[in-house]
Amino acid sequence: MDMEGGDDDDQFVAAELEGWLLKDRDPFPYFLLVAMEAGSLIRAIALMLAYPVAWLLEKSAFFEEAALKLYVLIACVGLRVEEIEAVGRAVLPRFLAEQVRAAAWKTFSSFAPASSQRRLLISALPRPMLHSFVRNQLGAHHLIAPDLHATASGRCLGFLKRPPPHQDLHRRHLFNIPSSPASSRHEEQLLFSTTTPTLKYLGDLQFISSCARKKDGDEEAVCMSDLDSPVVFHDGRLVKRPTPAMALLVFLWMPVGFILAVLRVFLCSRAPHGWWPALARLFRIRIIIKGEIPGRAPGGKGMLLVCNHRTLLDPIFVSMGLARTVTAVTYSVSRLSEMLSPIPTVRLERHAQRDLQRLRGLVEKGSEVVVCPEGTTSREALLLRFSALFAQASDHIVPVAIRTHVSLFHGTSARGFKAMDPFFFLMNPVPTYELIFLPMLPPFMTTSCAAGDDGLHVSRFQVANHVQQLIGSTLGFHCSSFTRPDKYRFLAGTDGSVTPRHA
Image (cartoon, rainbow, N blue to C red; front, side, top):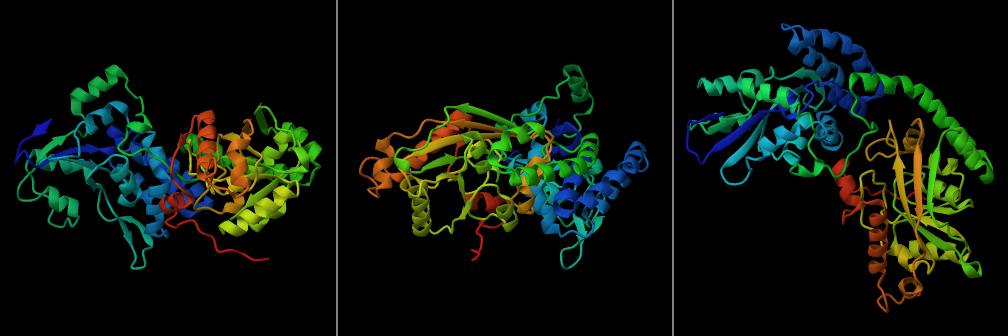
C-alpha cells in the first residue's frame, strides 16, 4: 500500500515489529530475558508467576495494554536503563532474529536503505530493548517505540513514558491527522515534518496479506545470514527462547540441575583420573572422541594440544579424551575454578616474552599442555583470531577441534559471574563434548618457529592461521579476524582486559 503525499525523493517504508515482522507477538520471552540477565533469578521467577495475570489481561480487549505495563513494571523497575540497553545489545538480538518471518523480511528488505528509501519500525516494546537489533540486524533508520521513565541517576521507574504509538500511527498518516505536539522524539519530528514523505506502510498487512499468510502458512524464519548484519556475538545463559512453557521447564529444572552440577563438579574433581570415564557415564556427561589419539612425544618431551575454546572445561575434557593428565594454561580464570580443577593449571600474564618462556619451560619438562589461542570462549560457529604465541613454544603441536552441545544453559558468559560458567554447563541434562584429534603438524612448520627462527621456513603467524583454518574446516566454522577485545567491546562494553593478580 502506497501513500503519495510528498516528493518521491523522501520515502519511508514502515512496518510493525510484533505480529508482522516477528512470527510471535508475545513479548513475555523478551521481558523474561531482561529480568534474568539485567536483574536476577528472583525477578525472572516473579515475572513467570505474573504471566497468568498478564495472559488474562491480554485476552481482554479493554486491558490489553495493561499486560505490557505489568511486564515493564516487574522486569524493569529498579534497573539501570543502560543495563537494559546492554541486554538489548548482547542478548535479545539472537532471539529476535530467530523470530523474523522470512516472507515479511523479504518484503521489508526489498526497500533498500540506500538512496531515497528509509526503513521505519513501529513497536510497543520499550526502545532500550530494541534499538540495537533494529539498527544493526534490520537496518532500520528510525524506531518508533515507547521510552522508559527513569530517575536522574538512570534507574528505571517501571513505567512507559507514553502509550504504545503503533495502534494509531498509520491511521494519522492515512487520514492526514497531525501528530501530537507533545511528541519529542527526533524520529517523529523528522517523519511528521512539514513535507509529508511518501509512506509505504506494510504494518498489519490488512485483509489481503493476512489472507495470503493463512493460505500459504508461511511461518518460516529468515536465515540469519540474510539479515542486514548477522548476529555474530551473543550473551546470556539461556539456550532456547524462553516462552512461558520453556521458562517454566527451566525454572523447574534449575534446582535439580544445580544439585546435579555440584555433584558432577566435586566428584570428578576429587576422583582419581581413571574413574572419570565411569563417572561421566554415570552422570550422563557425553564425550565423543574422533580421530587418532596422539601418543607421547619422543625423547620425553612435552607437546602442545592447540584447541578452539568453547568453555572453561576444554582442558579437562581433552585430558579425559587422552586418558592422561595434561596441564592447562589460563588467564582470567577465577580462583574458585582453579581450586576445583582436577588438572594442573598455570596462569599466563598476557606478556608475550614471559608467557612464551613459561610455555617452553612446561614443554621442556615433558608436560602435555592444552592451550586455547583464541584467548576467550566463543559459543558461535566461528573461530576468533589465533594468537601466534603457541607456534614458538614447541615443535610438537597437535590441533584439537572441539564442539559442544547444550540444551538449556550456555556455559559461557561475557557479562555474568564467570565462576559459575562450569556449573551452568554441567546443569544441562546431557552436556556433550565432541573432541576431534587432528594429525600433529609436520616438522617443517614447527621446528624453525620453536627454535626462534621465525620466517626461515614458515612464520609463526602462518602456523597460527593454518591451525585456525584446519580446526575451522573440520568443524565447519567460519575463521574470522575477530579478537578477544572485539568480543568484549561488543558484549560488555570493555576490552576484556583483566588486572593481573599476584599470589
